[in-house]
Length: 292
Image (cartoon, rainbow, N blue to C red):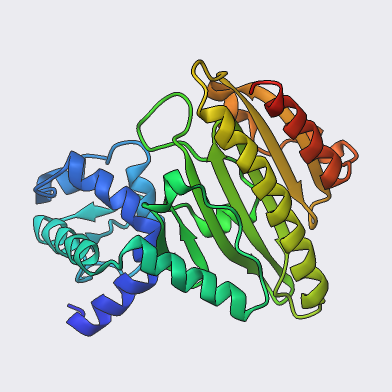
């Protein structure tokens, strides 16, 4: 059995990326699984993937047990379920107010000579810090954002994704790092990525590119806010995708219900020659202005 300190450290390291799946587990199995169920039952689709993030083996304080034949299927005991529930409740109590989280995020970016990307007033009340250089109104996987994986829908909810904002710094190796931003604020959705923080990068030039993306996005959000104030808003969305490290810059108009699938990377997306960001944003602005 691990000590409480070891378990707490391990929980802190992995807590954020697992919490959504853990909540789903607790909803499905509020009392955990007994020994027979752990041996015979497979967890619901998607929940079993948490097993890939816990590799401490039997006896872990979080009570995730493994079988020699199926390591991909985690098993939470009733004690483990209670332990996780207590940790999640403690997190909720200790969380700073959104205004404080937002002020701290702005300060951290300012210290790094970085602009703060647009956060609509309607979303600001849900702003949180999820980890080092990781914020937003929804908890997304930071590395998936770096991989330019697209807009993320809400767990268990079909249809258009909820409005959200997410920002992180993520990457791998010594030079492959980027600032990653996502915003869904219908009728616009923006995904942009600017290389920053690699050992061989020019931080001043990278910061200038990031600032320019923030300025362009903020102008578009201002117009989108006016459109949202009008009755009968269109169900279509202007989706902008920009990545300087992947040579992507384009605008697509699509129905809101297609946003999740339509924002995922594809060979066709990678193959098209990108246009300048100013051109893409101006096209989106013209489309939005026509709706006011």
